Image (cartoon, rainbow over all chains, first blue to last red):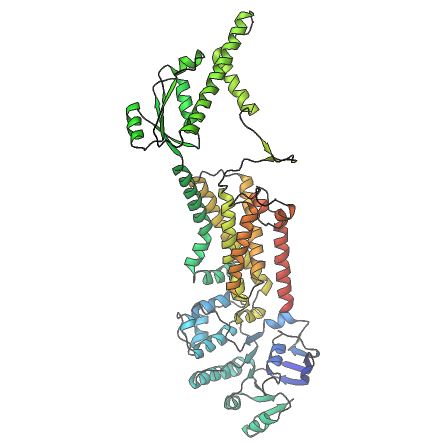
Length: 223
Length: 377
């Protein structure tokens, strides 16, 4: 279980997060919504151990952030908003590059299967020739090489076609439900959020998103 | 390290030509420049004809001495051929060592032992003649001295039983040991002897070091490329830390450079007849460790590859000039202690182990890695 307790973060005079508390259970998908600058990416960076909170605690099962940072990072998969892959390498080479430096070893068959599960079948194609959707899928596949317990995604479907969005959504849903992964997901696409997420975390003072999502029938946490 | 090698190799093989070009450029560049320089120097020698009528040891010794001179290109011909080529102006002048040259020298006679031919286009006749005359006078002087010693021994009933050859050999030994024919120059008010620097002072390893300086920096552009890529956000979630990633990559590049340095040593020995020794190998090793670390640290200061390349070329030019590797600068710029110390290539060019800049380079790498690690923690 991922537990966030009284989390606060400030950048200079700007209080981005204030006394934020919530819990996420394995197998849950949490949607993170809010206007630009509300603190979605900040929260993801804190959950990913890339940044440290000013106040409050975060824990993953029995591990505490800060104290067990190295151990926690083994269980975290972070998909940055920008596509973090080697453009000059092929899909296959990208998977092998990160597998070699990953906490977990995987065979070529397993790596290929990770891609095929998302309909990423251009195994030997150079990344620079792939569509935006395919690149997003590879971006996600690389993150899953070490089988993380927690998957943190910063707008993973931004700028891609509807079909690819659906494929990624279906894949994430399977990852949560079949492999009991915790998924925290930011997006500006409310249909996607409604469809995919079990609970929705609305960040910021603006109640616009809360009102918009109220009819979805999903549990909304406002902070 | 094996995993990192595999990962790095995936990236290396995407740009094999540029990698190979920068790796072999110091070798190819040095060989080409040295060969061309030698060729130009060879072509600028004065062509002279030498006719050796006397089949004696002294005549042949004189011929070898003339041939050993950097001033002339000697063609050994018959008198008829030599004159024919002189008439065609293929030769600047012709010198004939007459039959009986050795016996005349041994008798101390100096007249009509060598004849010469020149034309109205024999521009270098005078200096070549002077050189040959001085060589002959060296031998006649030696012969005269030997005769004088033998005569004295006989006249005063000396007990020593020296032969003419022994006296001559001893004279050559003394000439060698005492440097009788060399002159040491000093500047006014200076105790330091000025080295006899040739006009073109390019030496093989000096030239190689300058080209290697540029190419090592060029090959370190991966640091600029990778630190600006979003792919680095993944480092936090990999088995190895960012510092370890960079450190292992520096080691891999160092090994790659050393592999090509080994090739350089082999090729320079075979093609340029450079002498290989254990100290030289140690100097190259220390130079390479310094250079790889320094290149990483410099590259890490840049965000744009274009600016980095420009600065690299400027730095290489400055270092080449203050090193005196390409141009002898002693006459133009006083070699101050500061100029020597700020030059990372100085110790290598001076035939020493690169210690000072080696330590600086390792220190800079550690600072860079430590700062990076803290920044991204």
